[in-house]
Structures are given as structure tokens and as C-alpha cells.
Image 1 (cartoon, helix red, strand yellow):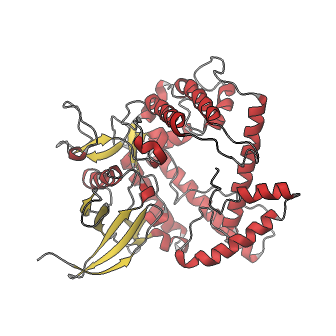
Image 2: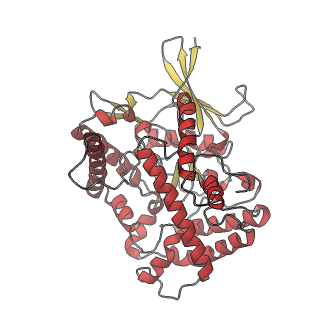
Image 3: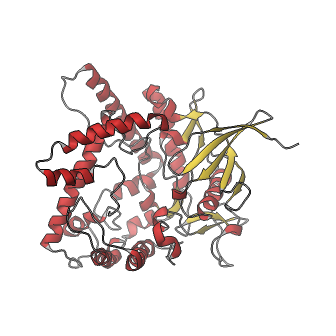
Length: 459
């Protein structure tokens, strides 16, 4: 006789899904997850995640959850797409991380590096998302090579499900969402896709980081995209010694502490959760220090610290030590990933750094082409951009200060039970911020750039 559910309760969830814990009459527990509208394109997001979960679990042997039932058809009796999966074994690493010894942290960090090493060792031929071949969103060539370890051709690579290619009216437009065979094809598609959308749907908007009075116009945006497309061939050129770093590779894109489940008795990782939106892409695009190990806050200097500040400093030093330990383990165990991380800290092509770094890369002459700079900006455009970057950096710094002081979260996410208290704190901090205004015009501008609020409709 099949098991039946006896109780349902809300479960841990994030920005993109609703999750429920289902208790069955045989005493077992399973998790049901329903995607929110912002998770990604309907059908594709669920279909890709389920296929990815089975591929990494069954083919690659990584610790992951078994899917019991799923549907990517929202017209089903549930009325929503869903995935029913095993409940993760153990506890989230985030529940105990800050109470662990340095030695225990390093044991878990080493296992994360081993997981990344397994992922980096698996070659793919295309850049996209993993699907079941029978659910593939496009017709597949008959002579297509199977994915690594998939002799039965159960899986294939299809279009990416990154929400940035599907939000607003983009769902209705014929865009190139992959799969791609070359980095240059992907980089070009980013520009041509956005140009296609902008020409049909972009409207004048206010960007208060740049101006409190003048709207950004569609033609300005399209002109910037055209400049980007001119530099793509130069940015994606590759020396033979880094060609290996362009090998498409699968990667978990959100390894934070609560996505890693562990057994504290054996100090082993038991499950990795949340493979939603996992993409197969060139390693240079995937390379990153996982969130659970990433340290970005400057370390405090000086010896005269209060007891409270000393505890905070100790925690920061511990965080920096974990980041460094991950780096050292990666260099030893996963040299391809380390090489990709190191490459992305240079001005060498292929250049993966943000577009704001391009001018510096060109003038450094570390990039392969020696041609003249193919695009130019007026002095007014450069000044506006510099002013916008200064304003954005200031706001980001303010958010980091609020985060470090425990006043407001930098990611703007709070638990429902804390919402009212945090909202009051937000209002008080906003008033303090706006009190720094020198006149009414500046006060109005500061009101609009305050980060902890819904964006004005005209933006």
C-alpha cells in the first residue's frame, strides 16, 4: 500500500521557491518544493533541475537528493509545477558553522574542494543546461555525442534557464538562449539578445545614481550594446595556454552554508541541495570561491580593540583564514579551477571581468590584440559613469556597514517574524541618512536612492 501524507508544514525556503515538509503515515518525511514566478522560465526550470539532480547524483556520484515525483506542467492536479524529493540527511552547515573549531571547518572545506574537483574534471561539449533527452526543448542531432558517463543518452544539453534571459517581455521574443559551442557565441548572444529586447520594449527610465532630472533613453542603451558587440571578438580571444579553461563544466552556483548538509558525528557532507538553474559553461565563467568560504570584508587593524570589537575581529580573521584555506586546497587538489580563478584576476583575454574594466585592460597591453581601442566615450559620458559608480559604491558600502553592525541585512532578506521590527529600523535609518542632505533637492534625491525600498515606478 502506498504511503500517504499525514501532516504538512512549511519548510526552509529561499527567494525562488516555496517548500513544505510532508510527513507520511509510515513515519518517513519528504520535501515538496514549488517554484515562485521569479525562479525562471516555466517548464524549463523544473525540467532542467530534476535532470541535473539525477545526473550529478547517479552519473557523477555527488551527494544529492533523490527525486521521487515531479511535474513541469502547472495544469496538473496540484495547480503548480513541483518537485517531491527526499529530505536532506543531517543538518545545514549554517546551523553550526560558527560554533565549529577551525580544524572541523577545514575538514568540511576540504570536502567542498573535492566536490568542485569532481565537477571540474567532467568535460562537456556545449554551454547550456542539462535536461532529460526526452524532455529536451529542441530537436537533437541523431549523431550527437552523449554526455560524460551517459552511454544510454538519457541526458542532453539545452537552453539556459537564467531568469535574465526570460524576464519581462523576453519570454515572448525569439532569443538565442543556447546551447552554445564557443565563448564568443555566448558573449555575442548576450548583446544581440538584449539589443533585440531593447529595440522593441525599452522605454525612457530614471537612473537616480546618475541623474535626478534626466531620463536614460533607449538609444543610449542600444548604443552601449553596439559598443559591447564591437569589443566581444577581442575579449573572447584565447591564448593556447588557457584554452583548457574554456572547457564547458557543470558547477553548483550557490554553495552557501545552508545548501550543504552535514553529519557532525562523522564530520562529512551528506547532501548538497539547490541545483536550480545550474548551468554547464566554460570554467572561466564558473570559477568562484563558494559563498560559504568567501571573505570580502577588510580585516581590522590596530591592537586597541574593545571586547566587542575583538570578538568581531576574531570572527573576521577566522573567515579570512577559511577563504585562504579554500584557495590553498584548490591550488593543490583542483589546479584547473585555481588557474581559472587566477586568470580572472588578470587583464588577460578572455576577459571575464565586468565591462567597466575594459579600458584598463586595453591600456595594460596584457590582452592579446594590439589594435587601437575600438570604441570611445565622450568626456561627458565618462564623467556621468564615474559619478554613477561613486554613488553606487557609496550605497554598497553603507549596506555593508549595516550588515556588519547587525542593523539591516545587505541582501534585504528577513524572516517573516522579523519583518515589522526590521521595517521600523529601516525607517529610522533612512531618516538618519536623509538628514545628511544639504538642501531639499538633495534630500529628494537621497530618498530615491535609499536601497531598502521598492524602486520608484519610473525606474
